[in-house]
Length: 238
Image 1 (tube, rainbow, N blue to C red):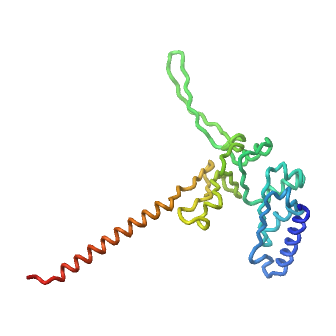
Image 2 (image 1 turned 90 degrees about the vertical axis):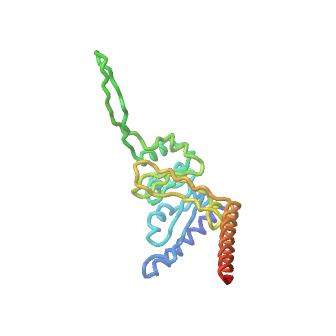
Image 3 (image 1 turned 90 degrees about the horizontal axis):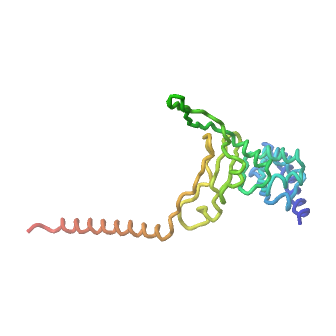
């Protein structure tokens, strides 16, 4: 099936580029979205690195999902995979990677931070000398990248610092459930360390219904009290 799917997607891309070329803005409107899951196995487009690089300028947005960069190197080669990685504006890394080179590269991309270390020394006369030294350590070590929690991902977006984001499932989104508070997928930040964003606690349907009932009961009691007060004031004095 891979050759058939690849030929189908290549045809769609060719037609989209032709329409974009005929457009006054040289872009598709509305844009075309390509969501290529397991593309190294199911849809190994020969032109994928170039498509990701220049497709956005024509209104073609491509989302590429891979098991690992090693899988991409085996399909497109080392240089093409490096170009594909660099051309992706947003990079989301999940836990479980096993390639040491890739883990080391991602760790370096997260940068380093200064950590203060307190120390003390004792002189011959027993006097204590305290000192504070600084040293630079990785924001995330390769081991921490590999052991990212389930339903979490490391987001690398353009020039911003790395963000460890909670990735809720589609069933947690508001449009796919009857009630509750929608989860916040991630929030970009410029802090020196990855920001861990936890999804907010959702309220159950039973609790929402109970709160609504309490509010209606309180409103009804208030209206009854106003009615009794108006009725009493309308009675003429003896």
